[in-house]
Image 1 (cartoon, rainbow, N blue to C red):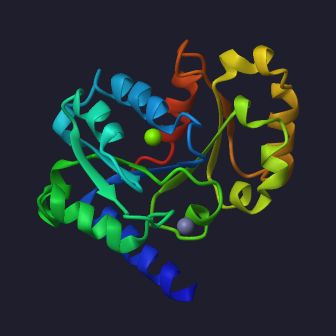
Image 2 (image 1 turned 90 degrees about the vertical axis):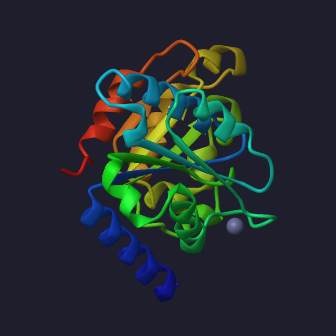
Image 3 (image 1 turned 60 degrees about the vertical axis):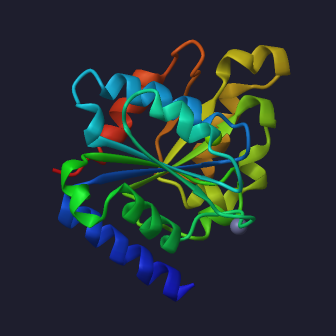
Length: 213
Ligand code: MG
Ligand code: ZN
């Protein structure tokens, strides 16, 4: 574990040196990570050139998420972990090489890293991101935060997604917010719907607090 943390610290120093703010999105499969990143990229494109934004998507297989982001003209790298259920620092280093190498990072302001859909081990392997964003959809059940307290504690921002479905799945969003805040009082909790756009502005400004340079 020490070794992972040291590698993550090294990545953070690299990102700081090259002026890239890195947001890592973590959450279960189907929690809506990609859709949230799409909405945030849309907002960011109002003030930022597409080639100053990078997306690194980790999936066990397929390049579907990367294809979705590529439509915005941003720099996209899809990392297939080939069975591994989380990204590790070497995957991120491989992604930076695929972007064109470290020097390309000077031309990038923001990097979105979407981890493999999994609520457990991605939280144990830090990648050096400036903000780790945990995404849990209302459809995953009201008690999800209570079941994954370590992941909640390892996060800097907590997002409750797909709130447009809350009534249909009979979930109390208030209770989810309360649970998240109780387990990790340090992290802001943002309630969102990528479908209706609810909470996306708020999430955008919360993430802006982590911006470097
Ligand atoms: Mg995805
Ligand atoms: Zn794993």
